[in-house]
Length: 444
Image 1 (tube, rainbow, N blue to C red):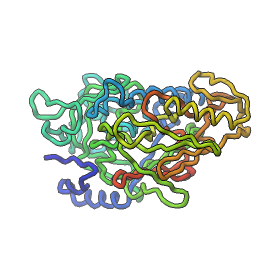
Image 2: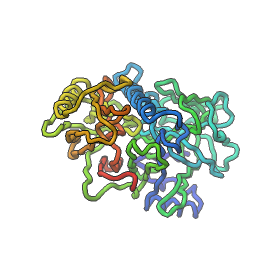
Image 3: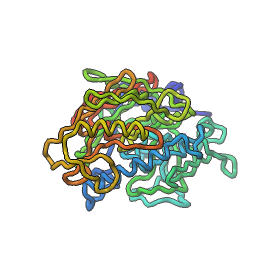
Image 4: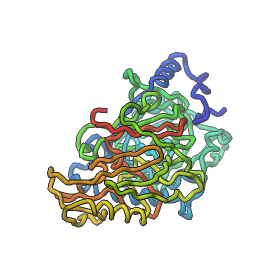
């Protein structure tokens, strides 16, 4: 019996499996929405945090991950097919982590939050091959609510690479990412508990589809034990929650050394509205790329100079750029980027210099704390003009050196997380809309 929930099904299609009390709690959370913390991978709360690294060293690594991630999104790649979008995502390059509980009794899991992939998975006992994690590995035998999924289920059929166990009793999944990170094991249903709702009570999501990984590799290791897929596909956390709404407010990179966290909100609590809010359609990227959130970029203005954008997704859809919280830089086609960079440099009266890491192209000398005059840069999506501030467009890569936080790419165009910082970004999958609202994310 399929318990899978996607965007076209009501959350309450599986309500008969709830106890009365859990149904009431879940209904309250669904109606009012709920919130969990997003932890930047370079903050002291992250298991990836290295206190011996300087802020510039952490930033350089993050910028380089942008290029690696973008290559895996390339729909022109010979290894890409409409039914295998998951295998093209570098899940370990997700920039934010989130806490969730798994099982009954609930066991805390800290996993990479990835808007560019779908499957939720964690390492499970018994492990034939597992990467190191400091927290205990999840034991499905210790949970009262764990159940393997059959090979004939909708959940099993929704994934591109599945098979039946030797005895034919359960669905086996396999996901492989562009950097050779991978997970395979049993596809199962389990109770997932998210950190807090608006009234402070945890929100339990019974019968959620997830991967119980018995053979896993992940490059970035520590407390993290897996991945939470937040993409647009059928088995993502967003689709399984079923409200079709989520939002986040990303703290500026200058706040990454603090103990502050960004907020990831679901349901009605995630609606973005009010003064300053602009909205643009979420559109198709074509080629069956349901995982990615595509927008239509029409132009970028630098001061009074407008540069029209004629790029495409490489598929047959209307969208030509994806928005991704897991990519640091904004990546654009070479020809368009060259025109954009030229327009920016013509508006800045400062001494150019080189990026010490050799990563970014347009850099200037600028002392810490001094005024660096950046031209107004506005990104024109369909029906939404998003005016960026200097923290969205230039980043300090070394002491006294700032660089344009955009770069050329021969892969899919990406609106990265530096450009999204200090915006409340709201996704409404049901209404096919994405909203931006300028916000002080340290107070959101």
